[in-house]
Image 1 (cartoon, one colour):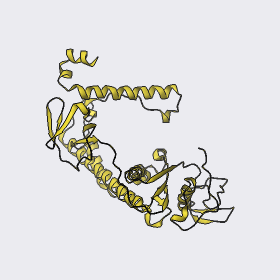
Image 2: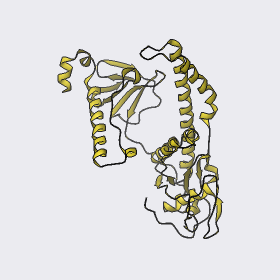
Image 3: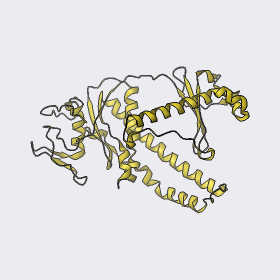
Image 4: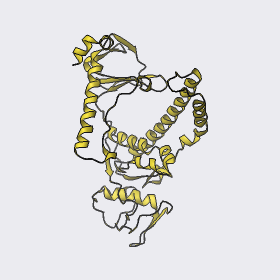
Length: 336
């Protein structure tokens, strides 16, 4: 069908067929998954969204090239269609890439993202394990005080400048159907630039913290937390600024890269269970109550620290490797 369409459509035949074929494949996979979710009667919040076409002015260029659509020669990237690009390499490719995605960001910068086989760089064994609990006051609370991740508040620090640029965009917003002015484009570029700076700061903080955790521990028990639901609460802005998703992704990726064992623990009832005796409170603790007191064994400790120790117990790890404290008995893995 694509071949026939290229014969009768001049503008379609001007582009390379490789990224066009890949675009159709991606669209087909997304549509098939969405239809399957509907057939399986999954809840709306778990369904894959139906793919839709974006308007040209609303979409950023993004093209995927498979192995037969590109090649690297003398440090230059050659794409199908006679396109030759000079690439500023961030690092050497560890192996031959199987595909590349060329895309543009909100600032107009172009990037080439290569898919290569994952490389494992093992680190020396330490014999220690760590439990990690996600939160809002602190992005991550662990069983080791030295590895807690405080809330960096990158978004709050840039909020004044961001609000100023957004007001400039609102004043210069073009009427419906009218092209944007130079002033609107300049304000939009400043807004995008600041957003990207905040995202890079969050990513840099998460990666540095993840590397320190992975370097000092062989096994990680990580709360498999889904921060999406926080977007509908009064803590939405604080939770977004905490960037829990970015920190979790960096931790899992760093653990895979360095050959560490990462256990993703289901978060159900982790704030209600006691890490010492395994007893569970009858009622959920309010967020204002920051100290966990067990009515069964009398254990008293900070709420988030207790949750971090529960991660270790549920993952079947030995908390003595970090805190020097062994629980009375290990908790069995609880069903979701």
